[in-house]
Image 1 (cartoon, rainbow, N blue to C red):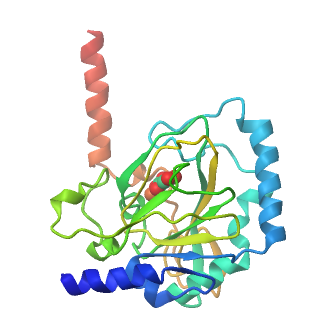
Image 2: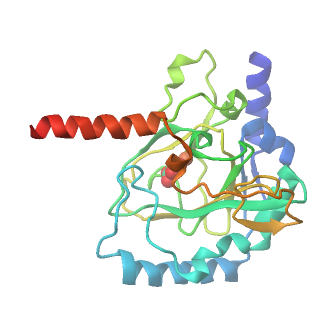
Image 3: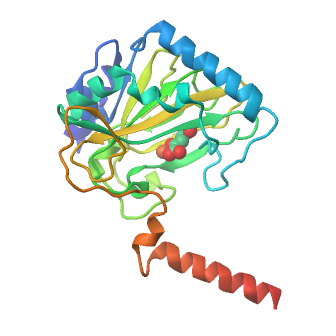
Length: 268
Ligand SMILES: O=C(O)CCC(=O)C(=O)O
Ligand SMILES: [Fe+2]
């Protein structure tokens, strides 16, 4: 265990810079790529965001109760296609090889409508298809400890999928992974293994924290949404949307059933 932690700690020291290092990423579970997006591209996205925010969101938005930071509103075209910027697939190809696809693209924001912390979790338990995925977090604002920037438990992805979905209790493990809260700026982006434990604190200073979260994966995964590099490596596809429909009986279906029964009991 000490050797594992030493290797992770060494990787963390190298997990930020202008050139992606896939070996460091594999050890740490994340990498902060600095100044990787052309300034004019980021500025175009920032302008599109500001116009979208002012016209559609500033007066109030449809806050997702299950995950308040995840934006539910339809993005304007300039932001809905951000993942097509070549640097993302190029970076992912160092992890997955030449055939890369998109799993999902969304925004996670901390504005006046979602200032709270996000509990410690991994994303893999929310994903369909193969577990070999990574998030690319693309900030359109500064993101740091003061406005609810993300904290990563470096190396924790080595434990894989933990068997349930929810808040992880880090004290239930013997190992203490190093915690890192990188400050990122527009033009940087973070690559994160989807099994890595991550969390974020509350937005304390009121500076809106605006970030895209695009999830990429190898193109052999049947849940791929769009091909980003190479060729499709699968002949079969299905949608991760409304995944409850794939089950005749499940944990989620049971919760829905019990909640209905509870509501009926309360009304009787
Ligand atoms: O926006 C954040 O700070 C974290 C969001 C997140 O990790 C998630 O929605 O899975
Ligand atoms: Fe997450």
